[in-house]
Image 1 (cartoon, rainbow, N blue to C red):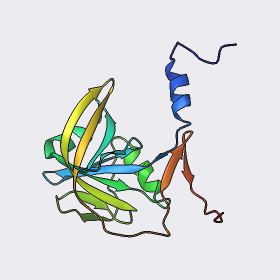
Image 2: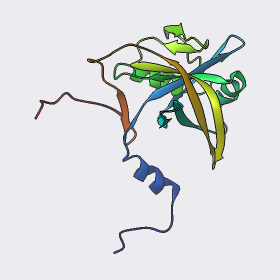
Image 3: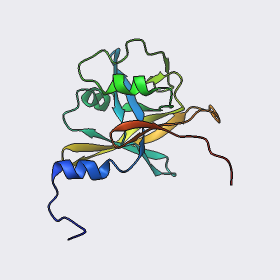
Image 4: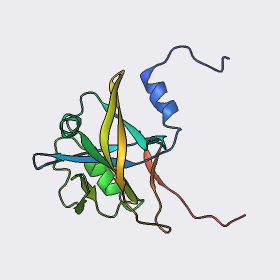
Length: 169
């Protein structure tokens, strides 16, 4: 029996990648008064100097064209108390901002209140990658909140997961 497969089937590929736990963020912006946003599990840091981050988004995203036009976005890193917000921003065609308390970032992006942290970014670069776009942002401001007790919202094997505090060794 072989330990590998040279045929990459979409369902098997998705299942394999589901074994990689990721944090959950919501990417937000606004354009001409229209609030935009979507749930993202593909956010990561890129560079410390200059401070760059990235995320991937489906090429046919309904939200991203407005974000691209605005030229800026905020990354809202969600806490384990914000799974409902993640679900809300993952829906297509709904009012994603209904009932969501928000603040405004220095760049004018909507920031989700209660997030663990947020980063204010200008679009630095965009790269086509298969059926996705990889967006690189330069961080221009960020929250200063120190949240020791709060924990991140995680995604693993198709479900939200939560960290559990453990005793120190």
